[in-house]
Length: 252
Ligand SMILES: Nc1ncnc2c1ncn2[C@@H]1O[C@H](COP(=O)(O)OP(=O)(O)OP(=O)(O)O)[C@@H](O)[C@H]1O
Image 1 (cartoon, rainbow, N blue to C red):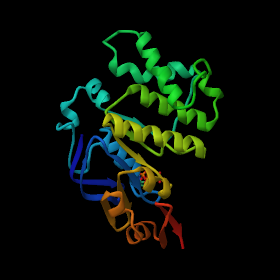
Image 2 (spheres, rainbow, N blue to C red):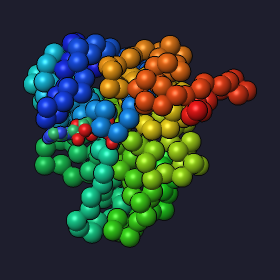
Image 3 (cartoon, helix red, strand yellow):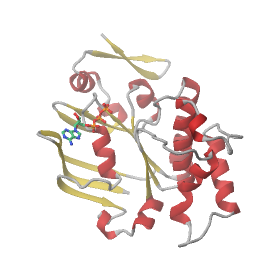
Image 4 (spheres, rainbow, N blue to C red):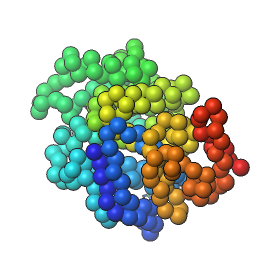
């Protein structure tokens, strides 16, 4: 679905990522973990085609972004950005319907099908009944769930999500992760999300990319989310313990 070859990412004078090779396939849920400033957002924006790689090659569905009309690319991949800034009043349903635009013919208005898909996305984000609420009146967690619903309504094959768990309470974190897991397992979607909670990452992801000051590690969760790799990436000793079949990471 998304391939990167010898990818390099540079911010200012710092090299964030050097010679990264990745093949992200449908049916996989990738967690991108690493300390603040390690390049998670920069990488997600690059995977989404919003930023050109500083080195190496990137392909979506076998083609570079330049080879995709924007509308077609938007049906293949969607991005949940980290921060939602609202300058104007708008209803929750109208905001989520923006996710349907790549699916509309030119100049067409949203139809009943689009509204049904948008309402289903709101229900998946536990926002049923919020259609007419003004986004400016929402709490931080509710606003984050509206943005998630807009991405679900966009319905791309690859969902790229920058800290989707931010602002969500524990119940809604688990609800979202289970929903994403179902999209991956039942529909063969690809999900790539950045996350700070190592325990939830280890529990729900199939694969992990660990970014750290001494380079990156990518692969199946059990191979990559190890004590030495994570301790080196975060500069803090971590112990991995198994509790009832689940891996938990405990800082020393
Ligand atoms: N234009 C720029 N000039 C210099 N440095 C930049 C620029 N843009 C981003 N950076 C730096 O690049 C680094 C990576 O930023 P990025 O947002 O990708 O990190 P992150 O891993 O998502 O961090 P966080 O966990 O804090 O969200 C940061 O140190 C940031 O300050």
